[in-house]
Image 1 (cartoon, rainbow, N blue to C red):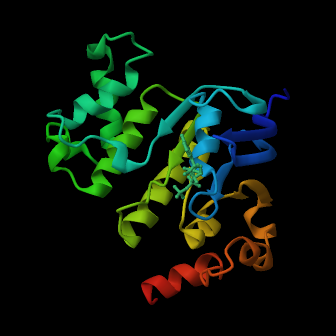
Image 2 (tube, rainbow, N blue to C red; image 1 turned 90 degrees about the vertical axis):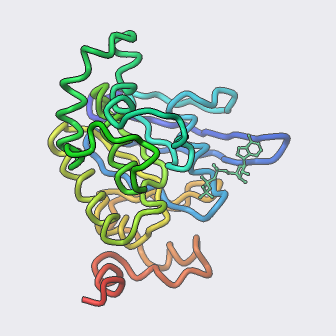
Length: 243
Ligand SMILES: Nc1ncnc2c1ncn2[C@@H]1O[C@H](COP(=O)(O)OP(=O)(O)OP(=O)(O)O)[C@@H](O)[C@H]1O
């Protein structure tokens, strides 16, 4: 694989109980891209992410990953009832890398919590944190193992519009600071077109894929026939904020 390619997928297909979830999906993602992965409910976005991270193995086709991956699952999957402190949740991100010696990761976890704006929450119970705070906490946890690629599954769920915009900006800054590649699954088409360098539109097959400015509203309308928010980027954002 060429040096600048971090993920190469060839003809990925996946069925569950005879039902086709993904069909002949092929793409290349280059180092440093900020990819927005969009598509309607049930399009196969999370399934594709699980194939890339190696959680699903019985697919057809081939996927090659050049680098380590940090994964932020959907926020709803985090069990908020476990009595654990915020800093401990972040340290858990080093579980594999430091082989259980969590004390090694304390300093780094503290630095990352500061970077995501949670320095005053270090000793707070996870159960008492807000949705937006929890999302940034998960980001710090995923960054602890210094991944080359970060995959985020709907990080904006449960976060208000302003929180969303701040989170996307934070992700973009971190992408540049750490020189990492980001794949973000999202339902916020406007935000994706504003912040991501590349857009992938999936609905079982890959409908369109390319630089965000090259994807036409017509292509999006084809994927989201009932969707009236295809007016891209800034216009959509300004409308949302009534600027
Ligand atoms: N283990 C499974 N058993 C049965 N069906 C599954 C399984 N995993 C995924 N599916 C189905 O595959 C389809 C794609 O699911 P997936 O979660 O990948 O979609 P998605 O694009 O991430 O959707 P959403 O935007 O709603 O989160 C859905 O119809 C889902 O019900």
